[in-house]
Image (cartoon, rainbow, N blue to C red; front, side, top):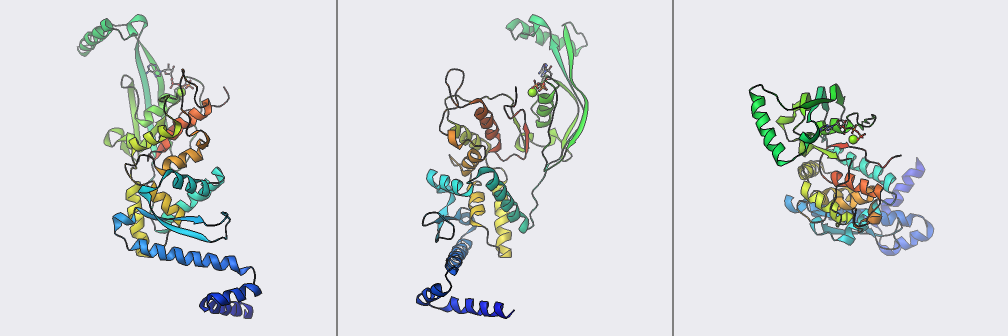
Length: 368
Ligand SMILES: Nc1ncnc2c1ncn2[C@@H]1O[C@H](COP(=O)(O)OP(=O)(O)OP(=O)(O)O)[C@@H](O)[C@H]1O
Ligand SMILES: [Mg+2]
């Protein structure tokens, strides 16, 4: 008890002393130096945050703090806090940030994601979750047989004639009915990973496509798929769910990074910007200072319309694609990245987007 009091007094006195007397103290209490410099860093950071908080909302959501170690990049050294405009981060800045934050991709990503979650939960925001249900889902294909199934001009004309006759109840064409899924029901719980297993051609791809709302329109579907109780025609499934194809369909001459950048730009940022606005407002009210890294990440991934976003660099890193980011994807004519990498690019293309529900069809190369 006594010791504690003495310590705290010493600290408070120490704080009010001038720079020259710190050196005196360093001589007597050697190991305290790094703690002191980290406190100075914190003060400096707090000042910067205070300056950012005074900005108008539009600018505030674009400005964050970038930390970097000044010497040798060892923790405990003096840190520099730089105010940055997240829309103007260049390639080197982004790369440095990602490399520093995710040294060991898996472990650091987990830590980062929990920090991310803590920040959101601290101010009482609950992220929306999606529960997908499918009830009595029956999917049937009505296929023409043999030559008749080919998409030739005469066949197309005959199909039109058939469909007109079909309307009055006359069926002339020979068709076979193929039941792909029969009375399938189930619930996919939110915030979980669900594994779908089945032998080849058992209808896994068909089920995933049905859940993602991307089924071939020629298939006959009975039953119901709902997202949080809403039927597929009551909202835009394409904005909520992404189907990651079993096949890799890419533009062979684009590099991995270009492919992901293009995909990210096409998909936009979704609700990330709204989330950030709400978060910033609540944090300001509660007087909470965010962690610089999480803040920079959230702000940089919420800006619209940039050619290359931090989310691409992040996705490249966590999917282990950073080593081949400037290699072309390749196709049958040109050798590009490896098969496993190609599968991960297919996954990456979808996860750079803001969609919440991901249907991944055979995403690893697996033992084949
Ligand atoms: N549009 C379609 N028209 C006709 N038949 C189809 C159609 N889509 C799927 N099928 C048939 O439905 C069955 C299931 O196909 P699906 O692709 O869903 O299987 P899968 O479980 O994903 O198989 P795999 O493990 O080989 O990927 C197959 O027999 C396939 O031929
Ligand atoms: Mg399949």
